[in-house]
Image: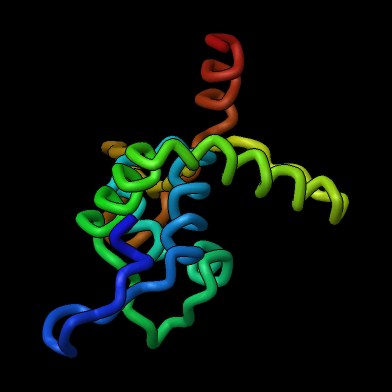
Length: 135
């Protein structure tokens, strides 16, 4: 694997801890994220930053080195063993990883002819009854 080799010079990108990459791959798997979505969410979500061990001021790796790391793990056929050890470590500490979804909420204004630009629309009792009857 390319991560165990000694650097020949100080030129280029600095080595990134393989554990950080592995944690990112775990998040990617749990939340079914593409490489690009993983990069975005790792930069956007404080919980992701904390899990991988980086703070707000640290640079989170982009999708390219994450993809390279994943391919390196598959080539050396160690990814399944690493995942099993990670899950065993979680179980030993009384934890369990569960897959989930990330859902972003958006406020969408409801257009009504009665509402002016400066006031909030409230339905009348008749409108509420019609709405409830339709549900």
